[in-house]
Each structure stands twice: as structure tokens, then as C-alpha cells.
Image (cartoon, rainbow, N blue to C red; front, side):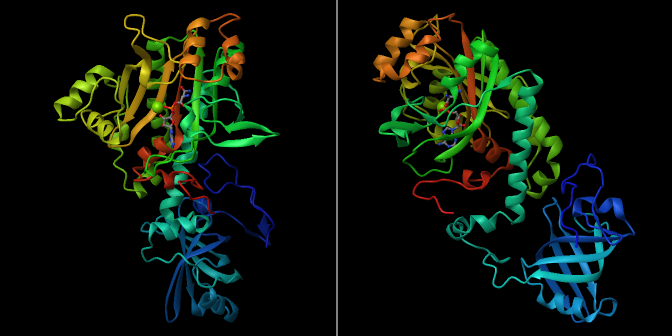
Length: 455
Ligand code: 4AD
Ligand code: MG
């Protein structure tokens, strides 16, 4: 058996086929079967399913490639030890197969393997996740195994492609990646959801957002972004909140509010487009109606907070100016449109301390939320930032934040102040919408939820 394989399982044709041969049989991934039709190859992986009927056995093999492949084991074509291995190859056993690649239009991968040799590397006993239905609590306890299921694999592949598309978007536009710290001395998004920890005797907090650290970097590099884990001790149990989630945040010097809205629009359209290009198969396997995603083209509908309140009042909601939108309100608003909705000009009092007031109506903040269609709620939150030193200092005091912890942040308004804007997009909310997953817990490999940290 070869020790390693150097090609990638999901190769889109770009990776050279430089697999290490076993004798003269190349060891390959399922994704590369097309290059070996009619030839003998070796595959290694896990038994997804197995069935047999007397003299013939069928092994569904999974090796990390997007598709599985069926190995056909015929008793009269293999030796006794391979036939015994067929009997031992229970669900999730690791196996090594050698066989001939045959085209088969009905197969998901387009191929089948006519097995000549089968070896069980480890026989698995009583794998907990069987093809029958399991409850979510059980699957969550077994998240480390649940990852192997086809639905979870499809969702996490979409997540991976979304991350790549996001990075590509900013890298191609000459943004500089600035990694913001995770341990911080101050709150960014309100003090009610802070995870506190001890930092050599002083309190420190897990970062709620990298934004405050991006703003100084924008003075060094102009266009910057960060992309990392963020933490919120959300004390409620909802399908839209995680305690640990990933956020991508651009911040741009001299970008004002209209430019920010245009950036969010361009960003979403480009990233959704790229994911559609790269993950058609995954989205189809999830039975996602991709026409909804294909419509994510600029311009997006825009609505001011005040109009949104009026619309909701018209729908019978008892809301006043100043109230926040909950999941239900966001769903009503988004359902009026067939693409993401941009809501702007929120009341200053309902938003974060750093948001720039509207020059025409200082009660309103130059804030933007993007609401995804189909009930997925707010996926992007952003704003123009206050760049006036004294106004920002007043806001810090009004929000009862410790001025001392924000001196460095105020410095940015002391040494070469500049208008600037940015936004944050929660990756899991975005992926949940892309894949139409009902709950964020399936969109991150190891979700952290209220009172749940295992595994
Ligand atoms: O609207 P938020 O709180 O904005 C910020 O943190 C800004 N500092 C970002 C910026 O301007 N640079 O959060 C941004 C996004 C939300 O729109 C949502 O998608 C996601 O982060 N988010 C969560 N996702 C999962 N679980 C949670 N608990 C989340 N809280 C926010
Ligand atoms: Mg928000």
C-alpha cells in the first residue's frame, strides 16, 4: 500500500495526476476516476453502505471526494480473503479496494469499480449513525461522526467554498488582511454578550468583532479586512445564534455611507456567484432552489428604518420608532422582495456607539443591515464610523464604556482623522441561507451553542 497520495480528492482538473503507484496500480481518489477508465486503480476509504445478494456484493465507498463510488465484488472474480473481507466490511469500516474503473451513467460519480481485491483495514462495530432517522440531540452529541454524512459534507463544502470566494473577493481588490486579536481589553458590540476571561489578574474578553482593530489598520493600508472567529455569550437559544461564529469584516478609509452600501451589494453578488459556480453539485444534492441565489444581482432593494417600521405597522405589528427588529419582523420585511434587502438609517439609540450620525437627521445612524431572503434574517451589519474625536468620546461615555480602554481607538481620531466605513458578515448565517439549512448548527464544523460545548 502506498503511504500517501499527493493529488487532491476534489480536484477540478487542475491537480496533476501524480499518484504514487502500488506496484503498477495507481492509488487515486474517487474524484479522479475519470482519468482512469478501463484501468486498475487502488482506492482507500470508508464503507458508506454495503449490501450483498449471495454471490455479489456492493460497497459504497467514501474517500473525501464529493461523490462516493460503488465497488462491485463478485464472488467468482475475487479470492477467498477478499470475499471474507466483503463480509467483514461493515458500515464505516476502512477498506482498500483494487479494481477496474468502468463507466456507469447511473452512478453519482459516473463510474463503478469492478473489484479484484478487497482488504479491510479496520472493521467497525456498531457505528452509531445508521441510515435510519436520528434525533438532533443525538447527532449533535456525535458531531465528530455526523460530519461524515452526505448532507453535512455538502454544507461544509459550501462553507469552505464561501470562505475561498470571500478571500478572493478582497484579495483581488487589493485589500490587506489584518488579523485582529481574539483576547481584547474592551467590548465592541455591547457589554451584555461578552465572554470574560482572566488575563494575568485583569479581565479580558473574547472578541465580539475585529472592527475596532481594523480602523487603525485602515490608516496604514487603506483597504483592510479581517476574517476570524468571534464570540458572543448569547443567552437565548435560537436557530440564528451561535456563541462562536466566524465573521468577515472589511474596513475602508475614505469610504462613506453610499460607497459602503455599494460595497456590500457588490460583495454579496460576487461571492454568491462564485459559490454557485463552484458548488452546483452540493447545492443540488441539498435540493437547494438555486434560482433564488441566481437572482442575487445588484441593485438590491433599499429601505430606510422609518419606512420599515411603517411597513410593519401596516402588517399589524405594534412597533414604535426605536424598536429593534426581531426574527419575525425581518422575515416579513425580506419576504416583500426576491433578493437581499438593505435597511439603512437606524435610530442612533438602537445601534453601537461608534456609528456616524446622519448629517440631515442626527437621530439616525448611517447604519446598514442586509437581510437575507427566505427568513434567514440579518447577514450583514455595518456603518460609517464616527471620525470626530469629541463626538466619539461623548458616545463612549454615554454608553458607559471605560474611556481608558478606548484611548488607542480615540487616537485614530486624533492623528489624521478620516471618514471610513465597514461591515461584518456572519459566515454561518450566510452559509445557512446559501444551503437553506434551518439552523446555524449545521453550517460550522463544531457548533458552540447555549450550554453545549461537547464535542
Ligand atoms: O451586526 P453585528 O453585531 O456587527 C458587528 O459586529 C460590526 N462590528 C461589524 C462591522 O461593522 N465590522 O454582527 C455582524 C454580523 C451579523 O449581521 C450576523 O450575520 C453575524 O455577524 N452575527 C452572528 N452570527 C451568528 N451567531 C451570532 N450570535 C451572531 N451575532 C452576529
Ligand atoms: Mg447587527
